[in-house]
Image (cartoon, rainbow, N blue to C red; front, side):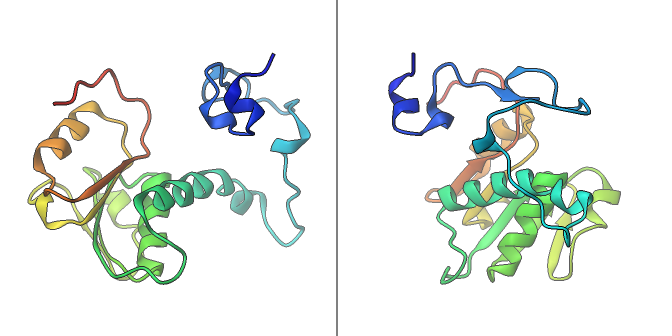
Length: 171
């Protein structure tokens, strides 16, 4: 049977949720994958496979930024921090910058920071995190999350896009 969330078409909230290659279902790196048609989208001929491969992480970023309060147009400019310069972090930084925000990306790897687009600054240490209005955590590292929870300004908004986090107690 379907749970209440599934009946409302909110699969993301399903208590028995499974995602191929992410949660409870191996096989995303197979040559062929069988799944429901509702989860498959045609890729236009003009879009390369490399470009199409960014559709899912970009969807994660856009959904996370929506939860942060960011909209495609009309955002009041904010000071934003993106922690982690992997795929999710790079995309989050670029989308925020395109929406007119000041963006600083934090990562230990200089090579990742070197890939940032124009107008996006990079730093290697998590200092003065209280200067940011919005923060995107894209590492999934529990130590980073602990540091952010201690250092963000009152009233700042933090969205967690990195996986996995261990059990976290809040006070």
